[in-house]
Amino acid sequence: MDRRKFLKTAGATAAATLAGTWAMTAAASRPTPVQLRIQTARYRLGESITDGMVSLSPNAPPPILRLKQGSPFAADVVNTLSDATAMHWHGIRLPNRMDGVPYLTQWPIMQGETWRYEFTSQDAGTYWYHPHCMTMEQMARGLTGILIVEEREDPGFDSETVLNLRDFRLGKDDQFTKLYSARKAARGGTLGNVMTANWEQNPVYTHLAGSLVRLRLAATDTTRIYQITIDGAAGRILAMDGHPIREPVPWPSEEQPLVLGPGQRSDIAIVMPAQEGREVVIAHRGGGRVRALARLRSVGSDQRRSLRDLSPLAANKVPNFDPKTAQKIDLVIGWSPDGTKPNNGFCGSVGPNFWAINRTAWPGDAAKETGAIAKLTLGQSYVMRLRNESPNTHPIHIHGLVFRPLRSNQRTLPSNWTDTIVVRKNEIIDIGFVADNPGDWALHCHVIEHQKTGLAGYIRVA
Ligand code: C2O
Ligand code: CU
Ligand code: CU
Image (cartoon, rainbow, N blue to C red; front, side):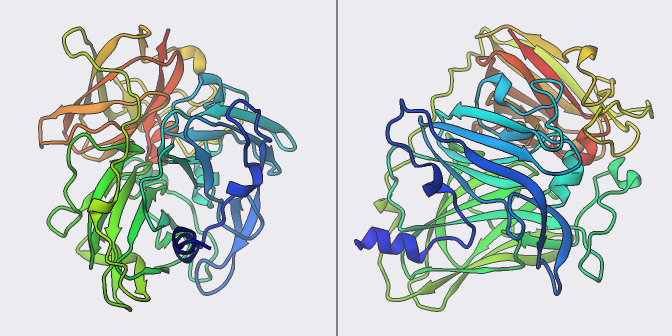
């Protein structure tokens, strides 16, 4: 075994990987679909085993799916649940019909049915997958997994840790309690009480002392906005939401934590402490408390690696946004006086409509015929104004396209490509993008209780 291989093995995360199961020979060949069986699961999240979870195996978290940049991927999603489902590949720029949005891009996958997804990601980076039908029910019970698209060029890390960050709402007996409350859905959303990384509470991952670790963070919770700090190591933020950064993002500290709203990711280079036994602590700071989410511990002798040993991540090919020719779209995010019950078809409701875009509550998953929020011309540049008129924070997500913030009325935002942006109370953010991918693309708040109670819709690019 050569050194790199050894280091990779030593640093492998606890999460399972399907990398070997669909190995491909050439980019031109059609990959054998990986089978993803949505099923109920049991797992020890706390003191005793929690029943009624949802995953892709009976007793483990959803696996990390590893794709290669520019190589085709195929998955057969099999639904063994009695409820309907549909799988969405968050952040991946793919053909519209592979996007996994029920009634908009496909039919719900009913019990016993299989749906094939096939796509090739030209973008490398950290992405994730989750259902887009019975979204609250299935995500809250566990079905949120990481999807990694590996760069064509290996940047030269010694090892990697992937942290799937999310909460669960459990009672004293470690069984699920009510997944949400309507009262909270009308406000910030319902938080979980058991914070996990890869379904473990504050797990430890070992890496060689002084080695270079790629830390991939993904906030897959239905509600929580993480304020991340990293203590005990030097490092650098390399990518946000899959895309290598264009403008620097400050190193996460108490003064300036790394904010990851539901759906957001970050790729971080870490130099492990030189001394054996030292720990790097990844924590969440909120409500005056610090809660450790996971730790990286140094083992063995000092590898003396430095950030300079890494080759920079190549930018993904994103079309050039042209501010001069850009057309404007205004979206107002706010409370809805509506109170009607959404029409979610087979995809589940969490209550009446509380939220709206442009003062219209999204009538529900099954209500495509209400029309697009905006109609966009293929290839055209746009500046979309997101005006939050509510006292709550909304991580706004757009499918199929990437955008970058241009300005905010409250703060300076690094203008990095993303698919999800946190819009604070009373904040106005202008985002810029090129409508380069044709289709009907969902646009919604990624606090699932908001999404399911009106704060959703779609844009049409044609
Ligand atoms: Cu991550 Cu429309 O979703
Ligand atoms: Cu998405
Ligand atoms: Cu919201």
